[in-house]
Image: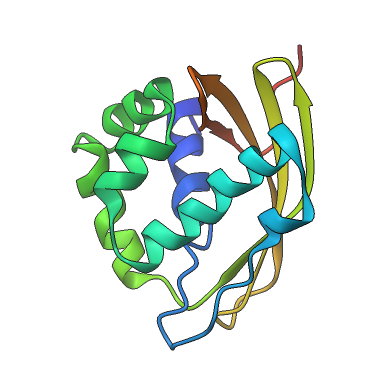
Length: 145
């Protein structure tokens, strides 16, 4: 599978957490401080925006520009349109940030997803600092330097 296609597949496989069945979301960002908390909050925001079905905010506020471009290139659709159907079809899930590592303007977040009848999954998201905000840059294993 080509890299951009794999990236989109990982993004769409992430359990856009969705608590569609009225589950209360747990806030795992509270377990961290400083930059680590800001990174974890970006993951929490992903869960929150997905729960609301707000693919446009996910694309514009949470994803790095390069990731948005890869999603659009792979799907041949605008980012928000590519994510909208996936969010609508998602089962109820909960995302929990287990670990955050910050190295300058890059960070990784180990995220566990549970629920929706599928197996629990653990993914590693790479984030980059974009001015004062952390944005999701890659999904899956962090690229080797």
